[in-house]
Image 1: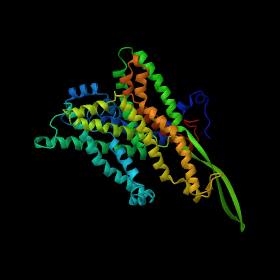
Image 2: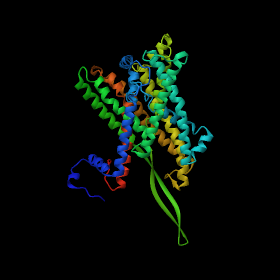
Image 3: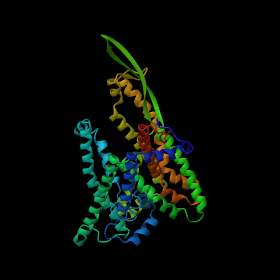
Image 4: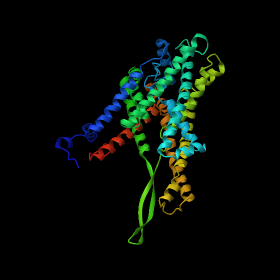
Length: 442
């Protein structure tokens, strides 16, 4: 065990753990590799697609809170209309779609049971599905911006065909390039690469958002208020992300020694998470809520389209009410999908384990289903409150002028940032413990 020096003993454990990480050559290489690819991502985020009126683009984003929020998740790439403006979200959508299709399509079920080879095949299918999704999402964004006058020479007829294809191909290629960077980070760096890319985009946008949203009027009051709310949100997010319900499990197995059979018993537990779905329900819900607004933008002169845009505007209470209930519903839906895929009762029975007082097999499955349904209510309501936190802040503090700023600094983005930090810290913790160092989470 490595002994700490007197100077190291006086340092905060988190700081000392960071120093210890950089002392290890392989960990230092992983960290620097991750930072380097994040720098590459930020360079790509400033490479624009051709044919953009940047002055008009800036005016659109100043007057449209929804586009400003989407730009936050892309690290400002959408506001620059860069080749990375779609981010990695088409890949995430493809992953979610494929994950939902696995229990429905028997062929995909067989592939998922093939171990590492099956995982690689499903990952390849996800990449293939990402291409049409990125192409379609890019087309929707460009149509929306064309209706606002930000781009010209757009369309699939006459001389506009080649410029349109160039923009769509560039945006699709940008998404695939970011996915490739994320996979490189996963293989050779620290943390989940795709999540790290999203994290980098959100963090890179925070200084701009703070400067534009809060440094006017009474900036000190705004910053202190939003900072206090952010601290409370971070505490709540960490609490619910780490909260688990431990279901006790007993194991009994037979051992043959010296020609005789012995029964060996042991105990453990199944950690059922309060929030098993993570951030997926938020992505589901916001994708569906944005769809009517986007489709209505295709018909700028229609009175029906204007009504739909008003109903699904982020300034309308109906948007936030639907957002809350859809997040709660999707949390239950996605949690049940994950629970069915894990098949915990059969796994326990094959390993000789059982829940005390519950018969193996279907009774165990029913018991675990009841438990996870009850604890998921807490996780679902929490995610719903996280989703509508910007709107609630605007209602509770109307005099602070925080509504626009709170919508820009989305609580969903905060949930993603905290989740990525916790996951990366766990990986560094494991690496440090392997080398007999104290980690972050002591």
